[in-house]
Length: 118
Image 1 (cartoon, rainbow, N blue to C red):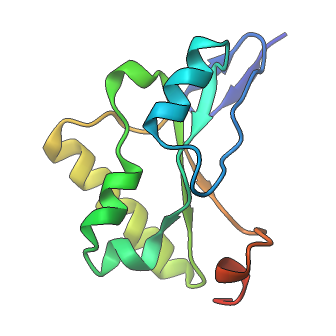
Image 2: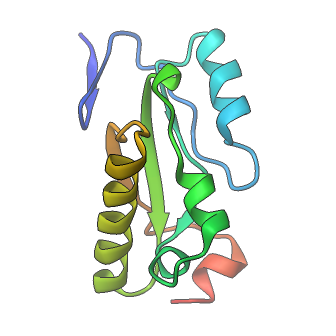
């Protein structure tokens, strides 16, 4: 029996957990090479996306050769999270980047910079 996350169907259920500062494209590709069927981007700030931060869009990018990748987004305002996710998907569509297999909304991270923002 497999596992389904968003559009990804995983036969073995091997997943690379999202880790801020670590799960960049290079790490995702290495983990895929060693058997991860599904990976997740670093945490993407919805607020930074809405305010047009270019570095944040770069963190969110997913390329076709990465396979099934979830986009992890965080924020303290549901409307900002929604708008940030929409903006990322619009940008991906325009620029030819791959769409995420799922969107992971981070709602429980113990990292101080995350929980101190509500």
